[in-house]
Image (cartoon, rainbow, N blue to C red; front, side, top):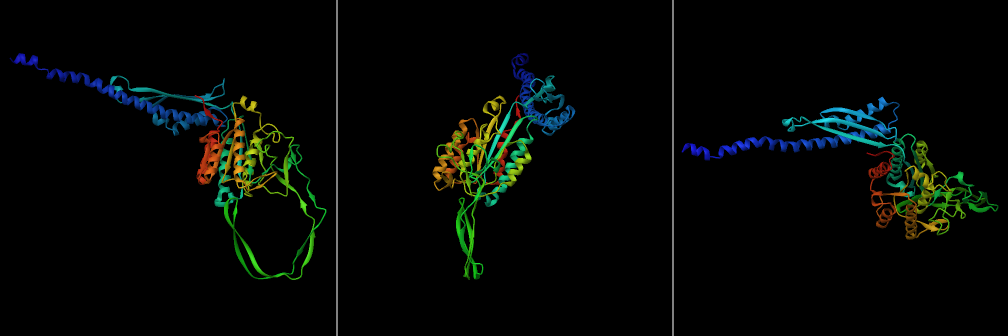
Length: 456
């Protein structure tokens, strides 16, 4: 009976079967964990290799050994040593056929469970190739220099953000790459610079002094008493402001007649050509009107790759006048066109051959406060100015120019919508609510236009 009971008792068999299968099950489950660890290590390693390739590819170091040291530093800083148990191979350099720069790393990750079946490590590798050449950038910075930029430190924030963008793009460009940046400060008008006075695309009267004297009465012996300041609220480029008048009781004294000969001069400001031409840049048989006795922001700087020139222009910006965005857009477009009036840009065919791009950044802190009253911009039809802005945006984009917009503390819904629609895509329209956000927007634009990109 005992023998029969032993033969028919299956409990011991089940225990033996579980013991036999436990190790494979544990190894299978552990293998999944080891594979996840290896995959995570590969992700970290790829990021480190990408960073090292970007650093090595854009460095100006004189020899291969120094570049390899820089690559090793970036690999270590960005997690290569933590990702791998051992590093078996590191290679980097320039590919002679393409001019691209590459970094390749191979190593091993320790296994916790697969080691039980004779697989103590898993091979992990990463490769990154950076394209250095074959690209070109032309960028026009169309920057609001209106009087409202004097409030809340806005102009100071703009200068810092614009200089950082210039530094990022020019400092990181590969050796020999074609990169040019220009600046168009705008307010009511754009200042094209005194050097353009006698060009055939502009009509500027000669400076002159009137032949007929202007006579006026003055009171040089006047005396004043009971003086006090009186506040006068007003709006300056859409921003509430107050000017103070010194009001006194006056004893004028004896009048004296005086006279002067009025002088009239040009300071670089241009107005709009007739409606229909003011949203185009061709048809230069109709010249741009130079406006006498008119003030505007500092002169534009045509496309250049000289950082000190651009920084100097940014530092020289001053906030004056009111807002007419179409004037800035028109001259930003002119700057990116290879034809007159400005001749610093390459043709579209040349940029295409270089695998490059033309871009325009429009930055403004507010709404159109003026409209065209040809050739001047002294009307008060904001809706008409918005319509001109929208038309110019579409015309510029139709020429293959990428438009970025940055609204700095812009709150009016119609203006927010106008800037969003002006940009080439929603991702290229930025709304900056403070100085830090403005800096971030300009930094993101600079990175988006970087000459260096991961090819593989």
